[in-house]
Length: 112
Image 1 (cartoon, one colour):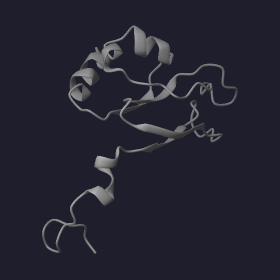
Image 2 (cartoon, helix red, strand yellow; image 1 turned 90 degrees about the vertical axis):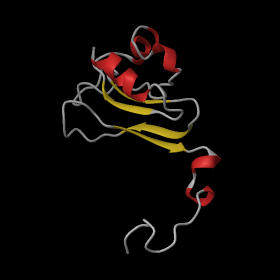
Image 3 (spheres, helix red, strand yellow; image 1 turned 180 degrees about the vertical axis):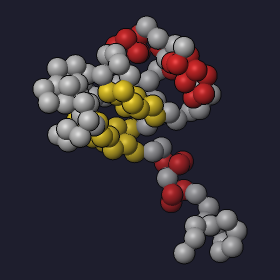
Image 4 (cartoon, one colour; image 1 turned 90 degrees about the horizontal axis):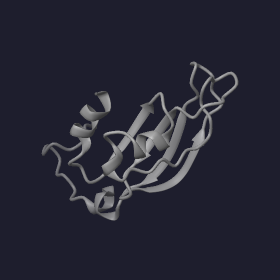
């Protein structure tokens, strides 16, 4: 039910990043869950659980194919019973800061 709800929330977005402790392997998420029709990719395949002797890959960062994976890494930081996963992604050219119009001061731009 939770994955169906998440699917409903993100399904209409072109660019998607879904991350968390999914309590299952990526193949189950991508083939046998409500997420199966989104075309998400699961770049990480290293074990993350339990953190003191990882044997299962339960923590994922899933990406839509519109995003480019630059790197993926399971971090050796056992501050939980799961190891954290980090990715670097490249946004499509149409979404980079250089492609966006500049905001004039006082027009909703970032605070100084």
